[in-house]
View 1 (spheres, rainbow, N blue to C red):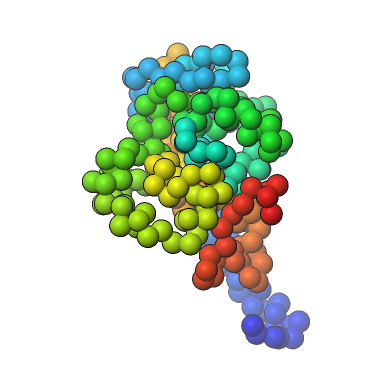
View 2: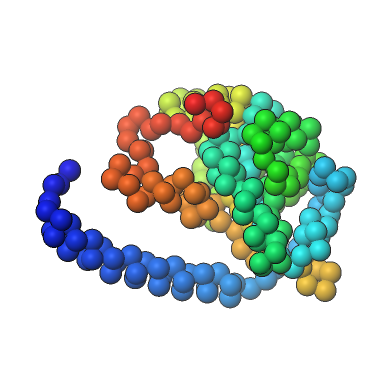
Length: 251
């Protein structure tokens, strides 16, 4: 902690403002480059369970031009949604309507847990955003947010990077991982068969195109709590030991 006069603080704040403006400009450039990524035709047929019945990926757009899917960590054997994903999803309800009416965009969550589990947890958390189950689909595997037991042992790819054998880490999990898994009602092995991410799609002339995906720290900008904490003196409170996220009704 450094204590200063108001004048000294103001000088330091103006210097930081220059860096923040440059960060904003770089963010604008990154957003432009995201928009210019090539589109990939989604040729596989996917089926989802929703509260409105069975839907294809194209039908999840709900008649709009764009679709944003948050890959929510909620595996079939979980008792509750991932607490960190839940903290992100706490900010979805209000955003959904703005995206739909200002940007012709549908936003929803997709998880591998059966629909009845998703609906029950959604009711518990007071959420109204749409949530689809990919329980009988390869969707989560194809978009790198679910892994098989074999991949945990032999390795796979996440965040566009190869990873190796996860089992040594899972046999002696960190306190943070163990607590997060317990909060979702799963052991660390089952818990880490799911991973967070988001994917964007476009619908054109009846065809669905994959346009963008992000994982891990690529989701930071979507996490409202982190954006607020990044502007406080204590930051994200990620010291050692790291404090695990909890469902907001369990603190």
